[in-house]
Length: 102
Image (cartoon, rainbow, N blue to C red; front, side, top):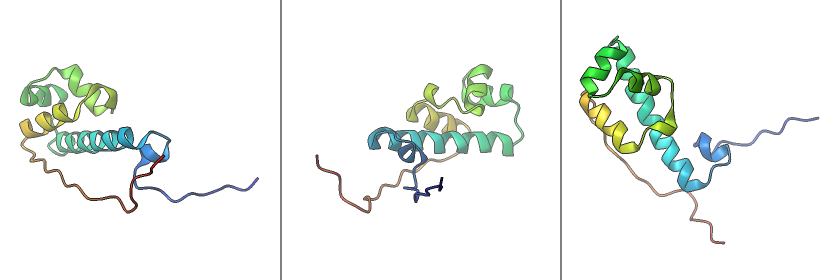
């Protein structure tokens, strides 16, 4: 049985079969979560220290560090990053192909 290889769309969630709008939201949330986690690790903060700085509980930071994406909104993640001293900018660009019409 031959293995078939498909080119990536650039969005792992879209490639995994999520509908395009949901895949876009998941990708944004995952990138924000990665940024927050990397910032906490780079500064060698404990979860307790990060929680205090971000104004949340330590279990909430644990959820962030474990990648519990379903527990975080984009707004919450942007707020957490801002409290960590990270500036967030959003850039939009058109897709390569136009939207699919059913």
